[in-house]
Image (cartoon, rainbow, N blue to C red):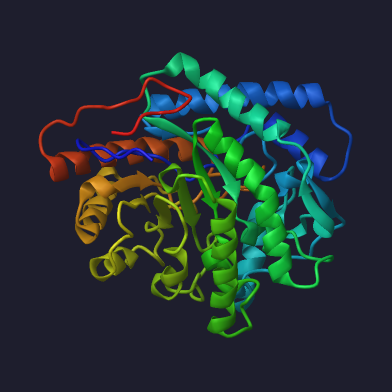
Length: 405
C-alpha cells in the first residue's frame, strides 16, 4: 500500500453507485432469471469506465472499479464458486430487532424495487470450490485497461474480495459439519481470488465486516467469548489464504454494518482488536465517522498500530445523506493522525461502501459523489495542517504494479 511523505492520501471502501439498468440485470440474475449476458458485460464496462473517471475527477488517490460488475460484495461468488444453492435466511441485526419501529421504517424506506438482498443469499449446499480464475482475472484485466488512459492521475488501485467469515455468515452453511470447516473451505477457495488480484498488480482489500458486525448478528444471543472465538477462526483462515502474499499489498476492511440504525449493540473496537490485528495485512480500514464509532480513534492513543501498518480511517459516513463539510473531515483526520502519532500512516477513507449490494444504498448517487468530493477537500485541508505548506500531488504511472513512496 502506498503512503505519502507529503500529504494524506484518499480512498474509499469499495462499492460505488451502479446505473439503474445494470442494477436491474444484477437483480434479475440473482433471482435466477435468464438475462442478456452481452448486455451485462456492456453495461459493466461502461459503468466501470464512468466510476473510474468520476473517482479521478473527484481527486481520489487510491481508486477501484466500484464493484459495479458484481451483484453485491458477497453473493457475486455464486457465479464464481461451486457449492451454493437454495436460499439463506439471514437474521436481522440485533439492534434492528431491539427497535422494531425503526425496522418497520427502514423496510418502508427501502420498499419495493430492483435490488439484490443479502438477507436471502444462497446457502452452501455442497463442497465449495473456486471453479475458474477467469472471472476475477477478466475483472482485473478490465480495470487495468480502463485505468491506462489515466496514468499519472492517481496513486494506485485496489480490488476487493470478501472475508471467508462474512461469506459463511451471509451464505449459510447447510453442508459442512462445523462452521469452522466451512470457513476453512471458503478461505482455501478464496485464495484463488486473493492471489489473482495481487498478481494483477492491485492492492487486495478483504471485506471483513464479520469481525465486528457478526457480534450483533450471528452471535447476538451468545457470549462475547463465542464471537471472539469465531473471529479467531476467521483471522486464522485469512492468514492461511494470504500465505506468500506480501502483507503490504493487502488491507482489511472491518465495520459494524453499513446501515442506519441504533448500533447500540455494536461490539467496541477494543474488544475485537486483539483478533483483528493478527491479520497478515498492511492496512486496516475502520469506521470512524458515524455517530457510534467516531470516538474510537482514541483507542490508538493507547494501542499502537502494528509496525509499518497504515490506518485507513473512515471519515465519511456512508449511511446518511448529509454531505460532510471539508473542515469536519479535516478535523476527523487531524484527530486520527494525532492518535496514531504519524500522519504518514493515515489514509482518508469512508466508513463503508456506498452501494454494497445492487440497488441497496442509504445514500443517493449524486450525494455519494458529493461526499467523495468533500473527502478530498477535507484531506487537503488536513494535509496543510499536518504536513505544512501546499501539498504536492503524487501519483504512480498507472496499473499494473503501482510504486510505493
